[in-house]
Image (tube, rainbow, N blue to C red; front, side):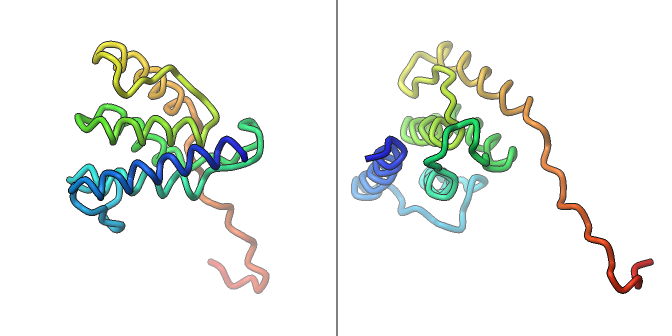
Length: 140
């Protein structure tokens, strides 16, 4: 079984366990900006499901830079489950590992978060798709 499949199942399992333990149910529409950790975790799992790949990391199409930035912010969450999901999602969708340990000491986590932040910030910004030429010549 491919490694990404096992990781994805682990992420989904953690989400299911959190829900079963009485945490607020994930709100699919909440996204990364939601006030509750369950919604942010749900958003991160959605990224893992959408952007995982069987191709080698160097051939992958990464999620948008803004999405990766949201995941890096989640690495700093006070919720250990949110940190775990964010770290595993980042590794899964980028194929990179900057030594983040969600249960590590605060200084150790901070150093790893800074490595993730520096790498994500170094990525090129997304550019809008090129406009296609107007075949009818009606554009101003």
